[in-house]
Image 1 (cartoon, rainbow, N blue to C red):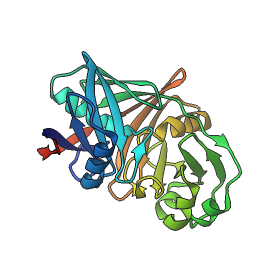
Image 2 (image 1 turned 120 degrees about the vertical axis):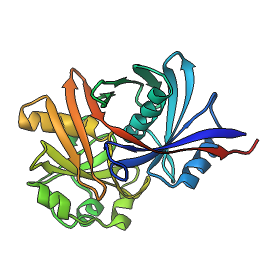
Image 3 (image 1 turned 180 degrees about the vertical axis):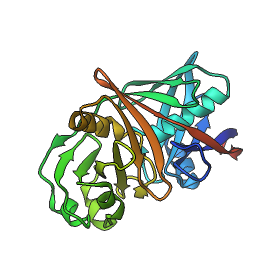
Length: 263
């Protein structure tokens, strides 16, 4: 059995920037164990598996090399990019197991806009491994359905911060995002997920469903620019609309190939 495989750099318009994702479009779902094996073999931040349900309507599941992920933004962007390049759209709908249906629109600007539910973070008391696991004490601590959120005073603190993965791994199933006002963007962030994927994720679209509402309230605006300040870096545009967050980005194709699967 053979299947197509695409590798896409998401939240960037340059190769070798943004976050890498594999996309495996199939005619019907694969077994969960096989999807995990493929994702582990790919060894990328995420592998998205998509199969059709109806015209321009697909089911999507996301896997890191370690586990299935409830919600992934950059691999959703990558999957939509692949489907648009194959003639779908200009709007596709993804059905998910954890966050409902997500609609994704292709714009003439080249950006791809994803419609996410807001997943706001609430102020919380930090557990000991969280505070011990970062090199700088935060100004504020919040928790979203996905991750602990640590807020800092400025961008340089976020960029210079170091993390101890062995300690942050104890926070499973939660990941950790650090964020601050940006110098050239409304806000910046970095994302650590040793329990679910790796030490640091290059660009994490899903966490902006929590970051954008927080910074919208802090900055008094509903349209924001964001930058994830990892080594690869990634640009995002966020817009609040009711109880939704519209997260946009660009994408670049790195490779198209074919994988051999057991019959």
